[in-house]
Length: 603
Image (cartoon, rainbow, N blue to C red; front, top):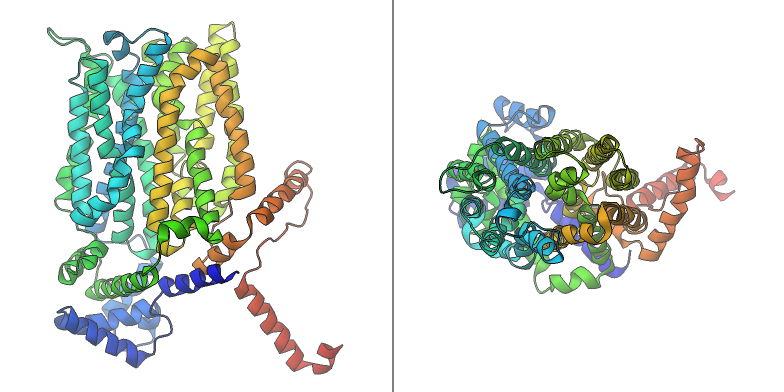
């Protein structure tokens, strides 16, 4: 590693566990000073035990200061990691519902758009009308990419996680109701633009809130549930569209069905607003504001024992102190692009976030009802088929919790992108069929298979990958960059699709995104590095490999993959990374052999 990357690696080592290597007496003295400074002397016995466990998670098995009950709880935290407090699962349910709100906010326009354009006088196939429909559909994502995503940090800084979630869900509720009361296309555009203030900050806040409240053994799995329950919200939104389609107009109200579709998406947001009143605040946010007593009380609600709460309280404190020391006097925005290790992570995150949009998934999420209608479905059948696509997207997202850590992020993407390209080509080319039955069958098969391949690959990978690719000291900044990338290209895709279909027909439009799947496969092969199961120090070494060297390695993987998966041979895989821990171990083994047999070593 170069000097800059080694400096980052040293900082990462400290941030991975700031208590590592501190002698026992000094650790106990530090805890006493901490308790006196923060007014927590009444918690000193628990804090001392907690600091010992934070430094060494297995020490409770060797030390007599822990009671049998404390030993049991600390052991079960690892052996029965899903055995958690009711309050933690209450928080999980609330976060999952917030993710469903996100999905519903995005999905209900799918069914409404086959009805409202004619009422607003923009239902023709003219270039003007198709651009206006795209503009209305994309309005929330225009707000996310230009304004609301950048409000995430100030909202969280001043309001905290709970109030930010409350505010964004309330905005979602009010703007969804507002959307159902509009009577012109420009009024609906304004209402949906303000919906973006509920979508953008919520998408960045809820996963962070979940991570900060969750215990380490299940933190990754709970954070991944954001994507899974967003997919559930998409399916639920499609089901609501189908349900409300049959609602007839009443005297004085035209288009009651699409108004209920748009308005109903706000109901789960109102439920989250009521739930969040009783949920704990993020302990990390409370500590960052100096509210240590409140943080300890919230941790006690989330953990089984006071020792666990004291451990997490002290560990969060020293971690924040280490982070402040690491970032002092550094321009993190500049370093994210000037230091090669950071720049490589930013490039890889940009590729997977851009790819989540330009693989074409939200064409189907936002326009599947229109696509099915154009292929020959009735409006009811189109809405039912859209629900089927959304349901498949959610169902096949469930095993992603396991496959993402089994097969690796990069391998899943390299396998699923060619499959998605083929599915998009099947969907588009089916429009050339002169038989309505064949056209309908081809479009349905293509879209359904696409959902199956998308869900375990490009569905969960981007957020997971971006969250772990950046070094800790710029991780929050890196995630802001990644989410802004996601929402900007989401806006581009959703505003251009109607005009793309008008200009190139469905065959050309689907072919366009199939081509992008192929381009993205190449970009992933060259620039996206595998992060599965790597420590912070190993990630620094992986992203320190020069861009050209990794791209050349990716090209050499093509003949390897052909021999292994096409010719069914057993070629020897190339190892691009040689981690320093492995080098040190190898050198230690060599040294031991020389000491055992000096003559053989000399030979």
